[in-house]
Every structure is written in C-alpha cells, then in structure tokens.
Figure (cartoon, rainbow, N blue to C red):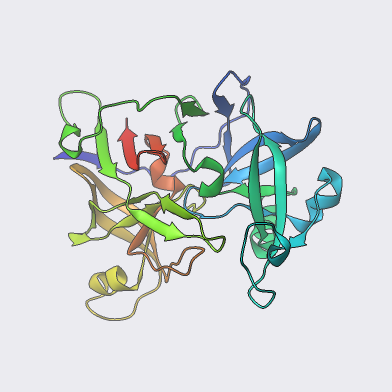
Length: 292
C-alpha cells in the first residue's frame, strides 16, 4: 500500500502556454479549471471544465456577444420532447477549442453556477463544458504541464490488475461505471470509479474537476463518519484509498450530492485531490487512469 500525506492547498497556475495539435492549455484559478476557445471563427469564449457534469451549460449573459440563441428542446429535430417536458437549450454548432475539430454541443442554462463563478473570479465565464463535450474521446488532463490532451489511442493497456503503486511511478486503472441516459435520449458514461474507500467505507465516487473540495461525501458515508448521526459541513477524512493508493488526512465536505440527472453518489472526488495526478478519462472505451 502506497501512502501519501495529502496537501490541502490548491495550486493556481499562470496561463502561459501555446496550443499544439491535440492539446488544450488550461489554468486553475480559484478552484476552477479554465480553458479558452472560439465560437465560429473569431468570437472568443472562456469555459470551466467539469468532468462530473453530464451536460454543458451556457451563461445567458454571453449569448448576444457570441452570436448564440436560445430555443426550446421541443423544437429540436429528431427529438420526441413534449412542450411540457421541454427545457431551454442553446445549440452551439461551431465550438472550437485550440486545434480541435468544431463540434456541436447542446447546452443547458444554469444561471446560479455562473453567478457563483463571476463572484469568485471577478469576471464572466461563458460556458461550463461537461461530459457531452468529451464523450467518445480519450481525454488526458496533465496538471504538471497544465495541458488537456486528446489522445488517439489508450495511454496504457487497460487491466485493473495493471495498477502500480510501488517501486516507481504510481498508476491506478479503473473501469468507468457511471452510465446515464440524458434528457435527449443519449446514453453516456460519467467517470465513476468503484474501487474507492473513505475511512474503510467503500464509496464509489464521481471524479469531477468542477468541484473544488478534495472529497465530498454523501449521506450514507457521512453517517458512517458521524456514528450513525446526520452530519454535514467540513471535516477531515483520515484515510482515502483509491485502488491501492492511500492518502491521509484529506479535507472533505459532508453533503447531499447529486448529479445533473438527480443521481445520488457515495462521494465526489474533486479538483483539490485530482490535481495530484495526471488523469486519463477514456470516454470511448470506458476506463479511468490516474498517474503520478
């Protein structure tokens, strides 16, 4: 078992990179993983990356500047959504980040999230990019180089027994198990890893760069920490084990946590912990790799 004493500070990195093919530079600022891109040919945007969100979201205050328009999901071709069940959406068909091929993302509103980001950062963020942006691709987030890479092939041979934690670099390999159906009828898989324990309690966890706290534990796990009593608020988890890799004294939040589909998770592993690794999220083959 490899042990690691957890450092609670969140590193803020200057944005000083030039985009190369298949690479996206990013910065971490006040707990947000931020990238830039363009809508169409010349309208620049700034977006937060949230690997635990099924959907991407738009800031209504940015639409006019970016030349985007809201519509009803009931009016979208090819979808059987009644007017009663419809939601406001923004079809962004020419969204480009670095040298990536433009893709179409169907974005939803979430004004409270953008209000919170604006207050924290002191400026407007235009989008939150969720799993729907990365779906079907192999994405590597390198916190040492501050680069997001789109890989053409898996970085390692995928076998759970191929994890390594001693005698060299740490490598942890997990199946990606968070299967969901979107409101548009599409099946996707969120980055959920089953082989995680918090203070000895098994806690299948969602890996989400859109959450600052290193660990957020849901009600079932929180009760274990509180000897069966309801518990919320900040705490410290004595031992977090991811596969065979062990971390001590990890800052955590005890809270009721749900995703965009109102699904409850045992825990969420956030940016404060994930930034200690290079993360590969293979949304094509449904695997997760953590390396350091």
